[in-house]
Length: 87
Image: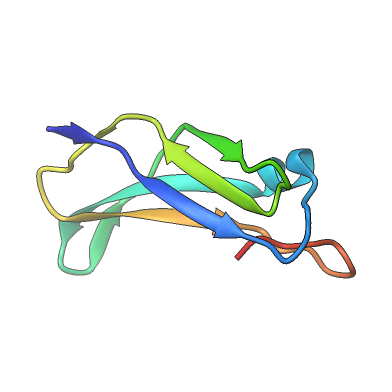
């Protein structure tokens, strides 16, 4: 069975596409035992922005649903200073 994930991120002001995309990553974890997860590989994704670049729609590539439970982690390294950030 396969599926994909869509996530919306928003910012209070327009963001720099290149900077945001370099900081974003997706990883699919599969549970092996109650306290262990299989190390993830990177998950491909695409991003579509609205006209003003204050909303980003993150779409994962097609994902295979794990045989056991799992989780998809979205990580965005935050910047410091006056740079706008998505949440």
